[in-house]
Amino acid sequence: MSAAGAGAAAPLRGKVAIVTGGASGLGRATALALARAGARVVVADLDARGGREVAELVGGHFRTCDVSDLDANRALVEFAVEHCGGVDIAFLNAGVATECGVGDDFDLALYRRAMGANLDGVVFGTHAVLPALRARGGGSIVATASLAGLTAVPFDPLYAANKHAVVGLARSLGPALAPENVRFNAICPGFAESRIIDPLREMLSAQGVPIIPAETVADTVLRIVTGDGTGECWFVQPGREPEPFRFRNVPGPGAAADS
Image 1 (tube, rainbow, N blue to C red):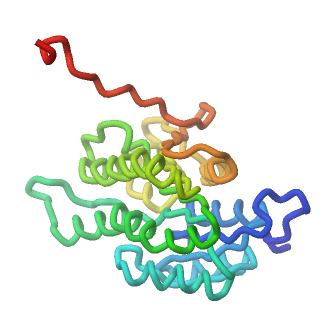
Image 2 (image 1 turned 90 degrees about the horizontal axis):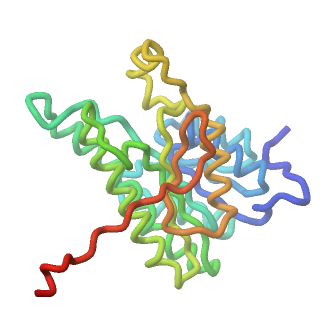
């Protein structure tokens, strides 16, 4: 049965959602969750075979999209508006592993690829979808960051850098877009079921680190989309209830600054 066959109480009935990186992992699970909640889903990915399969499962649409290309993001939104009448939700999820560091193993092409997908994809996707959200009177954007955006990651500092940037965007764009009734939040999972952790699976298994089911992340995205918060960064960790991370306030000027 199509996942789009949601019941009368579906909280997202009548809404249209775009999911980038929707062919597998967190994107696939979230596309399914959004469709079960009643949304019409446009799946976007470079993996056309996997993306079309997910689109068929949710009774939605598929569009090939390289999120590191601004014009491709614009074309994706135009496609959604043309085929679904508008956009209410954007899950900007596409991402890749870095595969290099900043020392002798630095590789400019790999660096540009990672920054293009993980950071530019969020910035370009946001820029492209904002006019469509405004046309609907507002909407919700959720960007995939990572627990790597909340802590130090010595074994992959470049990944931590672009994920920290996504966290910064969420915290800043949340209040900035609130007057337009556009909510912007980030989701920050630990090691979750996706292709991006494939190189780490053996190490994680040896250390007894549990892998978070993609469905757990998807359910959290759905909570964010159907909630009313903005500027939040939700962590997802095994054995803990997902919730917004509580950032410490930046220290203000000390007494010496007044003298």
